[in-house]
Image (tube, rainbow, N blue to C red):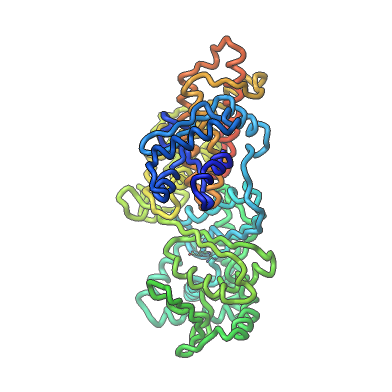
Length: 561
Ligand code: ARG
């Protein structure tokens, strides 16, 4: 339709107009709307309503394609409203039915490295680890669905000061490498961390251990390898529980071997400058509203920092995968860090062609708006959170039946993930277990219930699945069909914005319409075979779309609820 409209509009406006039909925000009046008339009318000093009427008349005279629409009209003050014909709606839906990926327009294929998860070893895992894992995994699945070549990397924080601190603590308490356990680390890290805050000398000692470790100190390396092994196991357990998978389990430490090469490249381009003994890279630009401080590449006592490892990692990824893009899913508070790293990477000949995107996320808060805590205690350990969610789900929904452990885990996952992913990732949100565990409202369980409900109907009526006829039977029916037609636009928008929330919200809309359809149209008692065929086919498409979107949101399907 855009093409036909474009041709007509060109007659009235010499410049190439940007013709975009928008999905109507008044679905009771029309399906699509064109609101570009005002700009053209203003330029031509015309009345927008008159101009709109002229264009509509022309469209109707000139184009046979108008059988796509049951109505086109201009309404005051100058919008053009389009209503699709039932026949055309079904033609489009039939195309979706036939295609393996619902006839979605695919973007060009690129090689994309996605860096998410990013847990720090030797530190306890807590609620703050959920978002980078869930949001990252969902974006990764979306990229893969959209035919991108994707390489995912967990990029563990494994060479920072916390390692020096933990090694310091272990040595002070005479703990040998064989005696290290995850429980021990969980206790140890907070102790040493607060010691360092109080005592400058201890802090300096920990820094020095970190530095020596980075330089290859034998004993420290031994401790480091053990810490890495034990932490990784613990981190993997969490990611497994969440269904989060990585192609690469690399970390900061793996980038170290690229630092000498990187340093040479930076030196060759005269990018490294001396500042009180430290090596820095100046990156401020004239247009900056806030001052962007130089990136510290190496401190005056020769240590490399978080930024250095991130730059070396870009270097490494370029060599290994030659990606078009690298995406970073990390806490929004790291914005400055990534601005610095990206600017240097853009200056560097070797890496300047890679598009770098920082996909920041906000924090998870409790109902009081402060960082989230479980009811039972102060440190929100993840296992406790999962258990609490499970208990609340069973209680709130008054469930007495026996659920398998697997099904319950899937449901807990759906609660936590849907609570998270329905929010614009850039914003923080309030995690309210009671609210998100309910099977009523905008929750994971509600979506899963809806899915299981439609799936059951389909299972009992497999033989009716066919292609859709030209007919639509009533308003609930039409609403659901129209919603499904939005899939292409929605998923492409979510892809472009890297925003799983766009998909989560759309999925909820589908479920609401599906339930309204189901409650108002009694499929099981239908006598008319033609209607039954159409409706079962429609529900088949609906369930397949719901399943696809759930998978992008990292939510599995339980066997029952
Ligand atoms: N380990 C980091 C942290 O805990 C997150 C890593 C993000 N990725 C990166 N390439 N810097 O904050």
